[in-house]
Figure 1 (cartoon, rainbow, N blue to C red):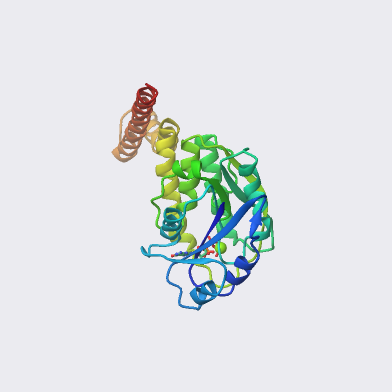
Figure 2 (figure 1 turned 90 degrees about the vertical axis):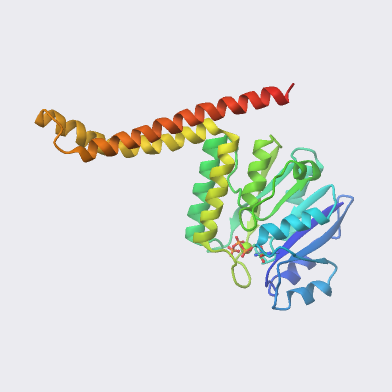
Length: 295
Ligand SMILES: Nc1nc2c(ncn2[C@@H]2O[C@H](COP(=O)(O)OP(=O)(O)OP(=O)(O)O)[C@@H](O)[C@H]2O)c(=O)[nH]1
Ligand SMILES: [Mg+2]
């Protein structure tokens, strides 16, 4: 069985086609559709009720993440597919995200938005997307290039290793980082991405901020040493200029004339050193935990 979870909030312009374009059967697996609706008022629910998809009404109205979490809790399946309802992803490409699971090559597949129609992703979102993926690649060694993609497929095994807490758009980050942390095999496959139908629900600033915090805390748990080393280097870099002012002032006057640069440099260096020590301690704690859990 393949169960497709489709989160919606006022997507009357896109939902019908998304539902219609999914196959009913794929490589011997029945395909079931579940639309989790976050409280649409534009007729989305009526469209879903008149279709082959089952409507699930979202109880916790915190955002997409709450909706997907509820859908995944209420549906039992071997393979799950997640797709947006705004017409950006192509249901006819489901095979691309599902094949590596059926062929047992991966447990979690991310549809990488490769063939994009012009302006389908706004420039600000594109830049944020690039930086977020880069940060995760550097700090975790995971080969992910589009971890925020809303088109993905995963096995029941992968779901059991996924921690879902983000109420909104942090959900894709949590899914990816959970897979990385638990060494669940991930694969990225190239997919198409079109201009959305209807209004966007994503706020690049507030949602971008939430996604960034999800990444920071997730990476801290996966690789604390790298995380705290990176954080401490930021403080060491910030300390460079005041240190230069303090040292050059002392060398040219033979004494400390202005206390401010020395003070600022010292505080920044102390914070940087503390971060480094935090990293070493957290790394040791993590190693001990691992050793204990391995018996
Ligand atoms: N169930 C549920 N779905 C939601 C909620 N908010 C957004 N969605 C759906 O989540 C999917 C992704 O939202 P989008 O607004 O397309 O966000 P995005 O794809 O990151 O941004 P765009 O570039 O504007 O498409 C869409 O199908 C939305 O309808 C919510 O609170 N509850
Ligand atoms: Mg979208």
